[in-house]
Amino acid sequence: MWKGPKYSDWLLDSNNLELRSLSNKVGLTNLGCICYMNSMMQQLFSNERLRNNVFNLNLKNEKDNNLLVQTQLLFSHLLKYEFKSVKPSNFV
Image 1: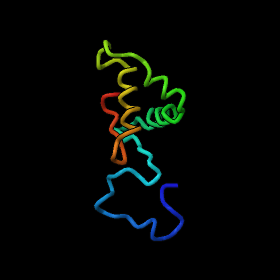
Image 2: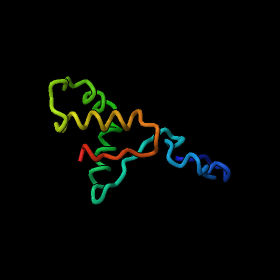
Image 3: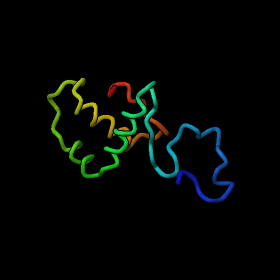
Image 4: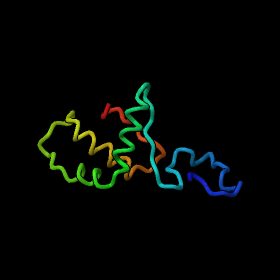
């Protein structure tokens, strides 16, 4: 659940609307007609075993436009980003 059960938990602080939610989850911004891709990437990211395998790939010599490199970058943003959503522009 994004917020707690009390009414006061749902009051939004307009200064922090862009920050990560209390559940510590980060979303993906829909850049236009990519909601299915976003949903799939969030599901793959949620699989901790798969996520760790992607992080453990040695891709130092790969180009930035490599799909696995972009997947690593996207997953790292979903893991550590401090704002509520990540723009997957480079991944797309």
